Image 1 (tube, one colour):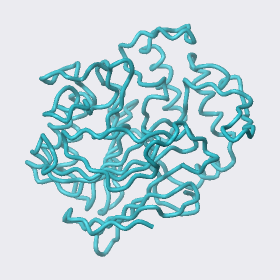
Image 2 (cartoon, one colour):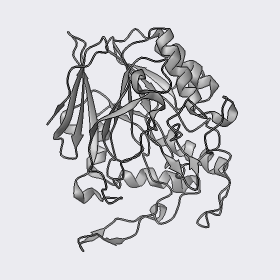
Image 3 (tube, helix red, strand yellow):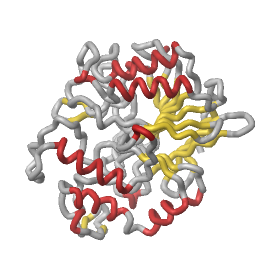
Image 4 (cartoon, one colour):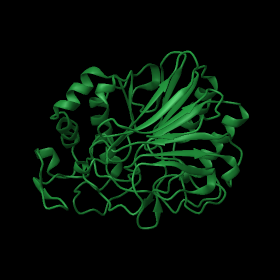
Length: 358
């Protein structure tokens, strides 16, 4: 990624794995031995402030990351593993690895460590807030959103009406995002999200971690919040909105269209999924038809054995380029070596040219 010399790197969360201790040695499927550098902070789940800090400092042991950080401007949001897998604030843990059972307490410590180690600029009342808009000239506005801080408890996600239980962004952030997207004069508005909109992300047993319920019906639960946003963008004629996200540990390109959807009050849009950066590769996840997504590219094979190690090369990242003259946005998905796997050119009117696989 550094060799491509991007103007901006957007990290969509899981910047650390605070709930995943490392072992010194691990035997891979082919019988080879993988050896890890293990520090005290990475030998147990993070609970104290210093243990959360130690997870960020562990990443900085890597020379490539230090070089990348020194050269490339960054926009960073958080997802779940900055605290623990699939967390929500009201959660009380039954995990024997934790002596601190209150996720609210853990999240406060984790938030402080995150803000100490990530390049977030604040102004006015933004202090401590993860969500923000980054203006990058007339061609691009990046809206980095926070799907963690205000979410309700993970549940079956089948509530028929919106409320505190169905919050994903929360009312204040949702209104901020609606106003910001409507007011933006940039050619392209990129929303950086912690979780894909149309993929079913479960939180066993039986709960939902993301917004998609999995039933493909009219919006329910957290889908109500997404439906409100998409309907607003159509009503206000906000064009050229693209979503980028991670979380699910593989690469994909999704096209959302009302002709395929149960909820139809929105304009077509694209979502690009990319990751992980040196973590296990999983997937693919199930698509939910509520907002009419279709897979246009998948970076892994169906039926792949889960948790593929980085040594197998199934690591991915994405790039977005906006041409200053035509204002065409070109989206690409790459493998770990930078090889282009997928390319899509999007004219600024939102009508896409044919996709090309490399």
